[in-house]
Amino acid sequence: MLSVKNLEVVYQDVILVLRGISFEIPKGAIVSLLGSNGSGKTTVIRSITGLLDIQNGDITKGSISVDGEDITNLNPSKIVEKGIAQVLEGRRVFSELTVVENLRLGGHTNSQDIPKNIERVFELFPVLKNRSKGEAGYLSGGEQQMLAIGRALMSNPNYLLLDEPSLGLAPKLVDQIAELIKEINSQGVTVLLVEQNANMALNVSSHGYIMETGNIVMDNPSDVLLKDEDVREFYLGLNPEGTNRKSFKDVKHYKRKKRWLSWIH
Image (tube, rainbow, N blue to C red; front, top):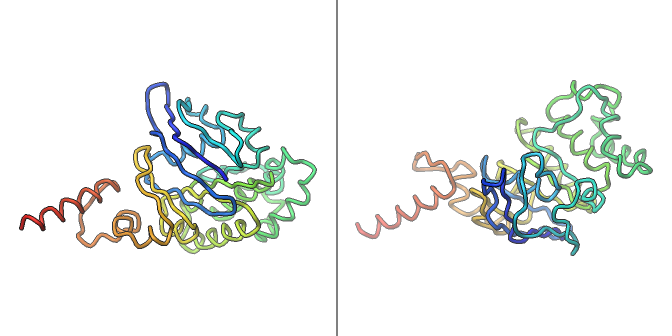
């Protein structure tokens, strides 16, 4: 199990980004973490993988553990050795390197298994095998996302953290990535899926958490969240009144106001 308890993160010593959040990812599960831009989702992933220094961030409170072992503030390479891999938002492949060279970079902590793991990646993503000697920069957006996921799998992770894997992809490719996430999970990899695309994420995951301004404001089984009126209105775009609300809290406030007005009339 990957466990985050009462986590507080501050950027540049003054900006409180995570406000004491807690959640768990049971082994073997797919869990989604939803939220709009600026809600703190990416900071959660950076906290787990030890990459907060990039943004001058610090964990000021709380803990992160994997399978009962505290990994709070460990070096990123040590966290990879603990079985955790991350796919960064925006794919970030090495465009001038070939597909195979990109994959080899992902296996540097587990070099003896590189040939076997490359074959495993090619079985998952046959299109990459067909382009294995081509430069990654010439791949389509969907193919680059497959390569980024494949590169993360080269370290043989037990936990895979995906940051916005559907970003910028056409709906058909989003469906394809969703199926691949389920296939990876079926092979024994636990997945944290960080997304703005709530429909995709909740249909893939078993449980979902919703973040807003550094807090977790709701968590439930994914099928329950898919049926929740507030979630449907804000995250799935089902807004019958045609109003323009900017946050999940606005939706909740609007609903309370509407109920209150109905009582006084």
